[in-house]
Image (cartoon, rainbow, N blue to C red; front, side, top):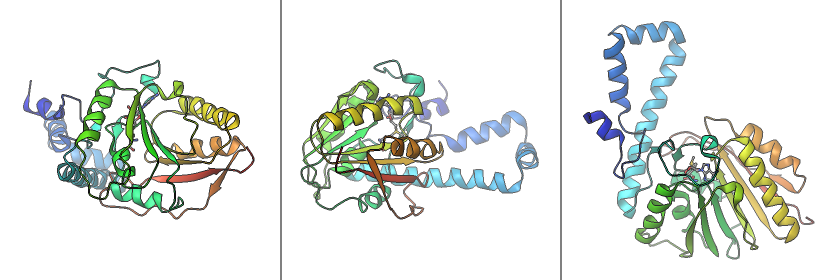
Length: 277
Ligand SMILES: C[S@@+](CC[C@H](N)C(=O)[O-])C[C@H]1O[C@@H](n2cnc3c(N)ncnc32)[C@H](O)[C@@H]1O
């Protein structure tokens, strides 16, 4: 196995695309010749080519900050983990997106749009990856925090992270992971904050949303839905789908700033269930 392939496999032998970005660029140039960058600029234009370089630099800087955060807290949450070779529960592997974590600054910014007092709410991260968002949420006083994740290897890492996480500001210690396809997940009967960060395609989202609405109709209670999306522009279909349920009102939220610790700036929307469900 080449050095590059070794580095692509992160500490847990998962395929991690955040490693080896420069190496991949260099081997592309070696394969196609030194004039390849000029050919690419000619084909895509100078603006698009500079944008591509800028996105990659940003990605590398944000990834460094993510790994620094991990070292400080004794956990493993960083990377762009590909799902292809993982053991996945249920039929929706091909609809799922790679595991990329929410940045701390992004998460804290989103939390400002929710009420301060959520001590009786359960926070649920749908597609919780290696648990970064669960750990960030545990610095807020939720009653309980649950991650739903369909990839066994990520579930194992997440459970070990939860045990090892060290943060003096942690306010909720009732953290757990449910290993399941989100489409088959039954929501608990507590007041909820349901968080989605680009987990899967629209057809899976529609099933999860339908299950959530049915659960709220069976057991009326407070519920916030937070949807964040980046390059996939999933917000463009998630927002109308949530509105069309007729039971959520969208809260007005400020635009997300471009934080240095975020691989991408996300677009996000926050909804709250209307009183009479
Ligand atoms: C973009 S990551 C989000 C990670 C985490 N929520 C965060 O914000 O840091 C998407 C995650 O959703 C998971 N996922 C994709 N489809 C799923 C499904 N049908 N059921 C459960 N998890 C799924 C992926 O394995 C991946 O870990």
